[in-house]
Length: 246
Ligand code: SAM
Image (cartoon, rainbow, N blue to C red):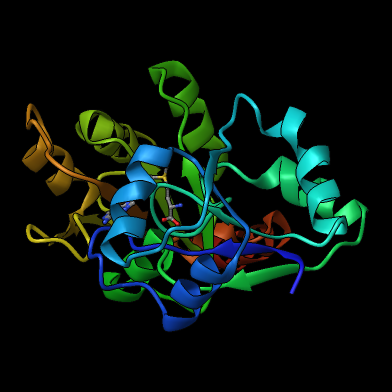
C-alpha cells in the first residue's frame, strides 16, 4: 500500500532483520538509503532488487517534498539507514516531519537499534532512561553538555565514535564523578561483542590511550536520587541536626 515505511535494518548481524522488513523492502517501489553502497550489501544478501536512491543529511530537506508527493501519487517508499533504525542518530527526521504535516501514512517496520540492545544488556535500570545521541565532539562543549546532564536520575545512553570513547569516559568521570556506574557496549550483535562494566574512574583508566575498535554505546547510571533533594528539605534536615548539637 502507498506509504512511507521506516524500516529498521541490522546493527551488525545480517540476520537481525524481520520477515516483514524483507517483504516490505522487496515489495516497495523505492528504497531510500543513507548510503546505497552500504545498503546494497544487505539488499543483495536477501535478493531484493528494488530500486535504490540516496537520502542523506545533505539532500533530505530538499528532497522531502518530492518524496511525499510520490507517496501521494501512490508509491510505497521505504527509508533505511546504514544500520539500525532510521532517524535514530541517522537521517530521516526532516522527511518524516514533512510527511506528518501532509498526513500521509508513515509506517514503522521495527527492528534493531543499538540504544535498546545496549540498555537491555547493560544491567543498569531500564524503567526510565534518556537517549542523548552523540555528545559534542569538542572537549569544552562536551564537558558543558555533561554538566547539564549530571543531575539526570534516569539511565543515560550515548552513542560515541570509537576514537572519542576514551576521552568521553574521562570527561564523564570528571563531570559525573569517578564513582558513577558506567557500561560500554561494544560491537553488539557482532563477533567481538564485549561489555565493559565499572565505575567511571575505572573505565576511564582502562580505556586511557586505548585504540578502541568497532562501535560503542556508552551508558551511565543516573544521578543518585538523594542528590536531587530540594533545598527546603535540606534546610529542615540541617535545622534538626543543629538542634542536636551541644
Ligand atoms: N540508527 C542506528 C541505531 O538505530 O542504532 C544508529 C546510527 S549512529 C550513526 C551509529 C552509532 O550507533 C555508533 O557510533 C554507535 O554508537 C552505535 N552503534 C551502532 N551499531 C552498534 C553496534 N553494533 N554496537 C554498538 N554500538 C552500535
